[in-house]
Image 1: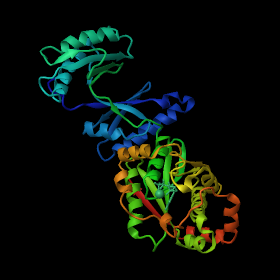
Image 2: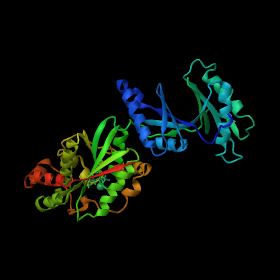
Image 3: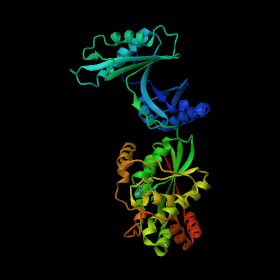
Image 4: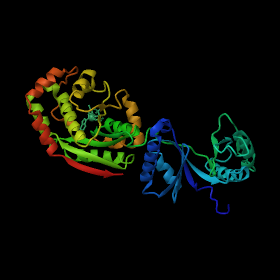
Length: 399
Ligand code: ATP
Ligand code: MG
């Protein structure tokens, strides 16, 4: 006990929800989760990981608080608690609880009465007290000599958590939210069409959250669109690499495609036809890389090109399933996530996007597939696709 430091937690309790439900795949999901946790924390500290019955305990060599914060970004994790270990006896737990509580109270202003409770749980059923008895044993001992705390079981502001398990007991005061979802990569690989806008980075994050490993493709129309626009997309991929250690960005030249559409197609159809070419090109890359789906930031009704009719025309050019995580989100909801994941500031930098090149005065609202196909019959679609793919630039970004 002499070395006990109540200001420096010793380990992190990791709670993960949904994957516990995934039957036979559970072991695979847990291994992926642990692998992702280690790689997320690689630059902070090596981790010792103990895994028992639906719970993971992480024991970092150093910087436990930083490890806990980092784990808050790892998909599949519901909550994390920086924690201290104790001998699994009521007396030892109460002593640690007293020190941890005293330290936690330093965060509150003096003179304010703080509603407080102890909440115990035990998976070690041989422990001599029930959970409620342990609460009642610990609370008065932890509160000895403390004046600015009142017990309030219903609406506590500060909850001292105790978990008694076979290997040891854990004491903690914080439950920090993780992102939830499924461990990254467990569902397979997908390709996200990433513009410099607000929505597609959010769509990529949502796909990652559901277990996809996401790589990226962006379409760039040099010299109509400059280097700064490309660098903005690279910066967005770098921001997203916080959530997925390795991200690959394919940059495809799109100038010739846009010029061909400008010169040959009815102006109101330009945007829909650009988008159809994007779907074709993305499908080719995804197939060559054995990716299973495309992801876009499209959202129903948000702009003229995102009516049901136009989305049908655009989607019809894809050769893989298209996932549109934001299809039923409001813009404010997407913005809220963009702020939370740190892409909003980058997305709102005022760089132009290739979609703004050769914009017609009036865009079609209810596009028709037969008109799209007639227009494309005048283009050398296959030649345009091949020449764009031949000009691919691959940029790898490590988180
Ligand atoms: P975002 O905010 O992601 O740009 P948006 O709401 O502005 O989306 P659009 O600009 O109509 O919608 O684009 C719809 C989707 O098409 C984008 O979310 C993205 O997936 C894809 N997309 C558009 N432009 C590009 C581009 N230059 N490179 C790659 N993908 C693009
Ligand atoms: Mg856009």
